[in-house]
Length: 74
Image (tube, rainbow, N blue to C red; front, side, top):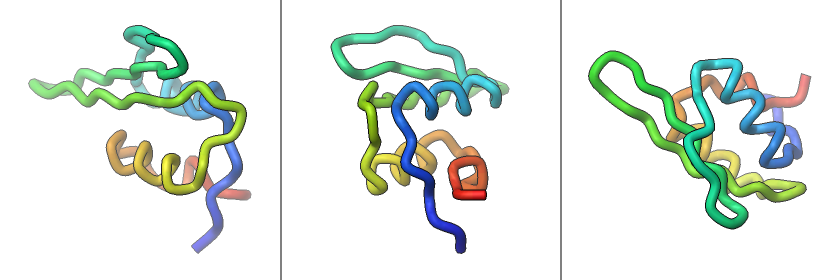
C-alpha cells in the first residue's frame, strides 16, 4: 500500500472540494467541510495546519468516505 503524502490543511480541503465537499465555516484553525448526498450530510473538520499528521489525515479520510488513493504518493 502506498504511503500517504504530507499534506497541508488547504491541500486536503482542495482535494475534498473536487469531490463534492463545500466549506461551511471556519472557526480558529479548523475548517468545516460538508457534503450533502441523498438524505445524509457528512461533516468533516479539517485543521488548517501547514502539515497534517498521518493519523489526523487517516481520520479525515475515514470520516469523508473518500478513497485513500486520492491522498497517497504517486
